[in-house]
Length: 370
Image (cartoon, rainbow, N blue to C red; front, side):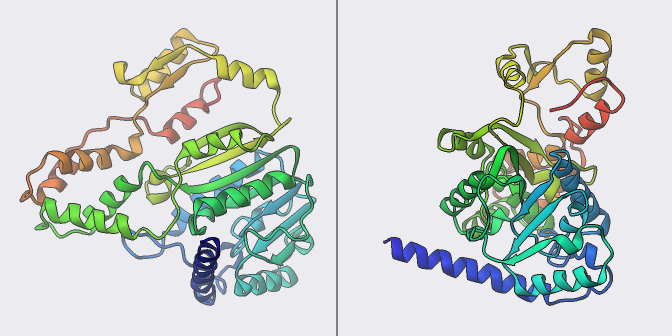
C-alpha cells in the first residue's frame, strides 16, 4: 500500500538522520578545523577514518567540477558539515543549503559568526529534508548540487522525485551536479574487494563468496547505474546533455574506484551544434582490439593529431586487481584459499587505463578529455 511505502521511507530517512546527528555531534574534527570536518567519512575496508590526503583530494576534485559550471546562484542539497560550502560560497552571489541534521546546521551557523570567509555570512542554511523544496523558487538556481547524498535516499522513486524538483528549480542553461554516486554495476565487485581485503589467508573461496553474497543482501545504501541518469531525459524534457564521469584522483580508494559523478545540463546550457557533433561522431576505436597503454595513446595523438579521437570499451585501470579477484572467484575451486588469491593479486599486471592518467595526459597535449 502507498501508506506502507510512505511509512518505510519516513523510517529510513529518520534512521539516516539519527545516524548523522550522532556522527556530527562528535567534535574531534570540527574543533580542529571547522572548514574540513570529515567526521563520518570512514573506509569500509579498514573501518578507520579516511586519510586527510584522501579527503582533500575528494573535496578538491568535487569543488573543481562544480566551479567549472560557473555557479552564481547555487543550491546544495545536504551540505552536511560544509566541506563544499566553505569552498563554493565565495564565488557565488547566493548560496542556499538545506540540510537534514540540526547539529550540522548549528555548527555551520557558529562558523558563519566566527569565520571570515567571503560570502559565508550570506549563505542561507535551511533545516529541511532533501525532498522538501518549500521556499525554493523555481527557475532560479543556475547550479544545483547533490554530492555524496543520494546513497542515503530510501529508494529510486525518492531520487526521481528530488531530481524532478531540482530540474524545476534550475534556470534555463543551468546544471545539476550529482557527485559521489555509488555504482550499481560495480556493487558486486566492490563487496568482493572489501571481503577479500578483510578475509584471513585461510578463508576458502566458497566462504569468501558466501560473505560477498551476504553483504550484497544487506546492502543498506542506494546504488545507481549510470544508465539511469541518461534515461531521465525520457521523462524530464528539460534535461539536455548528460555527462557521466569517473571520479578524479590519484589515490586509489573506494571513492575513485567504485563511484562516479554526473552532470545533468538543463536545456540551453550548451550550444546545440556542439552536442549534435558529439552525438554523431562515428570514429570510435575499440580498445579491446589494440589494448593501448598510456604511451600508445600519447603516441597516437602526437603522431596522427586527430581533431577528435574516440576510444570505447576501455578497461578501468583502477580496477585491475578487482577484475583479477572476480576472475579467481569464477575459476578457483571451493577449497582454494584467500592466500592463493593474494598471490594472484600480487602478480596482477597493469591492464586497463587509469582515467586520471588520461586527464593528466591532456595537460601536456592540446586535447580535452571527456
